[in-house]
Image (spheres, rainbow, N blue to C red):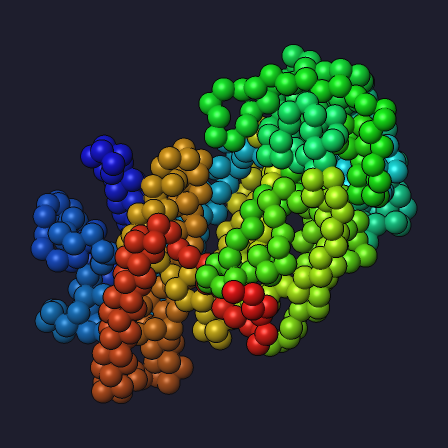
Length: 578
């Protein structure tokens, strides 16, 4: 890594964290001055003064250690920001300690509250400038769904849901959330012409979610599985894992465009990208009406004609469990390229059928020691049908929300993947942007508080949810590389984190001071000196210990190349096969 690429995220981190500390301390400063408290020092960083300027009675400075900041006011409480250095608190004029308890409470609370208010303005500005959102183009249609029966097709561009115009999938989602009545008319553009499709809402499990109608923003990529070497695809030289780039000279970015091009052909030239090869291959497939193997419900027309199925319907990797144990897939003898036809009673028409079938082997919210039920796999391998009985391993994992979950795992992943819609910029008016900005701030703050509760109760791993300087550096690096929009969003999220954490009732933090001043306000006199002293010592010890532990986690994470996802044995009887 060159010096510039290293310094750029470092400066980004310093700018992000510095701006949040500045806002935090500015909150303390402004409210202190509103209540007539004189401020002696306003510092970014702690320790030795590096440089600064004096304005009025306040020394605005930058200090040597960039690990925080502080505001030191006249007559600072020995258990607040200023420490016990002040002797001038005896003079009540402009003295913090002589102010009523409720004023001191508001002065201390102003810092974290300012950090919670800032994201509202940041998110509002981002929404007004324009938020990147997925264009409302249908990527896929769930087989047998309401949308398929209504005539919806992959590639349709949704222009309206009922009377609500739609440009992005956010518009579509919001329109479905507001649905009323027994049906909804979906207006789409197809081949340049507008069509109206009627979707009955009564048939949907949840009519306020577009996914329950079978609409999927994601399109399948063009990675193929060839499960029979005698098929036209196999005889034409295609192999499982190949990605079809062009059909008959025309580019095919999605599976639905590739399938449409193949449906019209008898003999077709293909451009194919094969993993590990720098050059694209040119292959030819010829339809063969004599090739007529047994067809499963999971085999669509593209497979029946050419012997091609999408890669998400096949096994791309077979691996050990993340904790190193042998997986059920390895024990059962599953192989890369095996085409999944049926799991239990479920025909496999899409990858979600696989995940649903595996998830159903353990009841939702089952205890960690609950073993999984076995599931029967029907796969096609080199033209032959195989039936395998597999019992998933039940493990405890950390999911995308950083919570512990009990999950059954087989130990394989799909061969193909998905293509997501293009982003379009969606701008909002000032009022709508402000509402969205407030909602985004409240939602993120709520989730952060919930996560803190889960960590405290053991429902979420602390090591996966707290980060130190290295974690902040990594976050800043990713935000700097992603652009201004991502950087601003990251600043807003970090500001929410700083605000929420500082409101925790921990001595030394602002939340601890708020509790002390609230108690003084209710009692009419301060808490006993010795009690405050002991609480302060405990708070310092807790914070120093936590900082050291989190720093160790950061170093370990950096050595591993990223934060791991712990996988813990949950059931007593995983399959043993060597």
